[in-house]
Length: 446
Image (cartoon, rainbow, N blue to C red; front, side):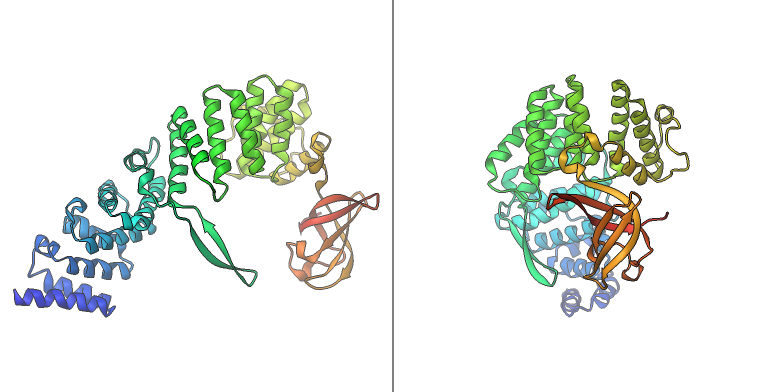
């Protein structure tokens, strides 16, 4: 017994001296031959010393399997508070590695969370482990997400901390601070999204209303996202007026193209085709080109066909085809047929086609979007050299566009007279005249 006690103490001391390799080696060579797994499990300080040492050696998976499969420690039977906390940190460290998640480990961490939830003062650690498991499960399982459903159903809002945390970070040489969402706010967002994904629309609407009334302050635009999910749930219930009302609220808070697109789809479904096309074109222009707009491009092709504008319809279809190809996605045969041959077949850049379509749509765009446009031309004048310098571009229509070096995506030495560039510009009124200013300049081949 004395030899056993000395061996246990030696492992613990090696761990506290941060000699992790020696602690693990000594445990395997001197302790394992003397003690069974059940006997080792009766020594919390030894379990913590070994698991900590493995964790510090970046062997988080080995450490967790040592506890779960070899020692067979059941969280429901753990009464030692220090050991429980230690295992919670181990579980959190394991989840951050994104390795080796299995149903056995998921079930074990779930039990650990239930036990940890009994300690009111450990809410912060509970939240870290809970959301770490949620994040890992999103990569591990697919719909209908049985484990995520279990996590969201078995724990309610009483389990989570309402306090917000502040972090400090450096930006532009200055220390700044930002406020993070509380665990309760994060849990609420997860629950609302999950209810919507499961098709539980009434529950999604009810929880969204409750959250908007309860939380005094939201972070990361969560108020807009809650409003959006509530609107989409109303849409699924065919309550289109309510859906449009709340999508409009979300759009006021977050000017995102996909919210405009969702509104356009509702307009079209309710036979308001002119409103649908107007909103879809706003969505098309908002935020520039993105492969995630592929469905929007295809829908605009269909709507333009119904309107009788077959040339624009084909251009939208070709953009959708090229966008899907560039992203490595399958291109439906029906979409290929709609694309036809309306645009130069040598054109292979979806972004360039997008810019051309933006010019075609200029008369249909709202006033604020008419002012921003894309073009290309030659740098014809440098006013001042260096990082804070400026100059002028002459575009293909012989318009003069002012630019500053700070707007350039090119290396400083590349910005010179005679260089052909692409640009994004804004047209502004100054002293009664239209002036053009580059918001961005970038590489362009003639």
